Length: 289
Ligand code: UTP
Image (cartoon, rainbow, N blue to C red; front, top):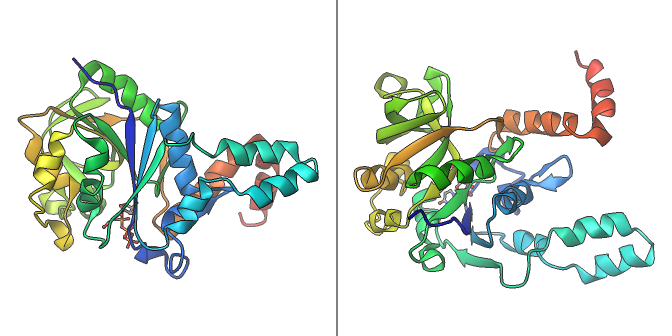
């Protein structure tokens, strides 16, 4: 029987060095695309996919994220007094139900695998999703919803994938593909950040995962991989054989908001996708073409 995915982990403890100085006192996941922080897009995407429990793995400067998902009584009162009901509703919608959110701390940024491992006592023995907020995805329905729909039919470990240019394989986890129908690819192995010459394919894992709890048995070993970090890709690779592994080519566009150019492009794409912004942005762009 395929167990439903009810919980999601949001690792937000990275150092965000590519985005300094913006990320000096603020987590990268609080960077804003149009008018929402990246982490809120990820939480909204998880909600749409049916997630009921949200587990944040935080590090430095965690309070901005905790505050964002909590009441701000002063602000709410002030908006109410001024009759700004619409924006008040927007602010209140952000807040999950009491008890739905929990926070755990990754004391040292030892890698994504380690960050996910820090959430193990919140997950116990059920499947769970992992969302990396800096991979922002414009998709309808959202990427995780597309994945959950597929997962409900095939189970196992399922990640979102896309083809990347051959010279960029050293930035991603790459699938060693055995079977590929153009939408779903099954893998016999995974390699983290291979050099282009060593990459088994160009199909790369992006920041959305549905994982079985068996991955924690591998992460328990605390084995360091590429870059001296405890890699989630390595732990997933070790479960292949026991747990089926698939990559889903989702429908939509992904923006790497951990990089400056990706972040700027995301702001353009998301503002052009909004009715209230589209005309203004198109007009503005004429100046730069
Ligand atoms: P990145 O690989 O983008 O690393 O992490 P980073 O530290 O955030 O950014 P750069 O490369 O220094 O600019 C991918 C995701 O994994 C989380 C990050 O917060 C991000 O969401 N992460 C990474 C952790 O939570 N802990 C870690 O030890 C590493």
